[in-house]
Length: 118
Image 1 (cartoon, rainbow, N blue to C red):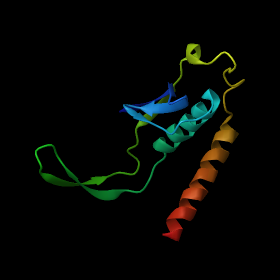
Image 2: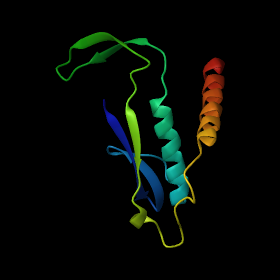
Image 3: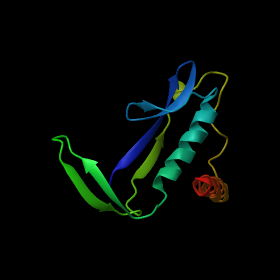
């Protein structure tokens, strides 16, 4: 299975997370970028709905297939402690499972609310 890397990097006068060559928004602190990357990475692994999709290959041919909502990639947040600024330090302890559940539940409610409005 594919593993998607969310890498914490200095970017545009602050901190961001990067997936492949794509940067997130810029955050003021390393800890903010790390927290955002953790949320995004966890959300990326959440199952969704099974959908019929269409896509075009590099030769210009169109294809149809069914994409399982449970076929999600693994994610990994990559952080280099040596890259922190002197006035910053890593989080004192990793997030607890209950914190993760609460963050994901809140994110799910927000997404559900936005989808129902459209």
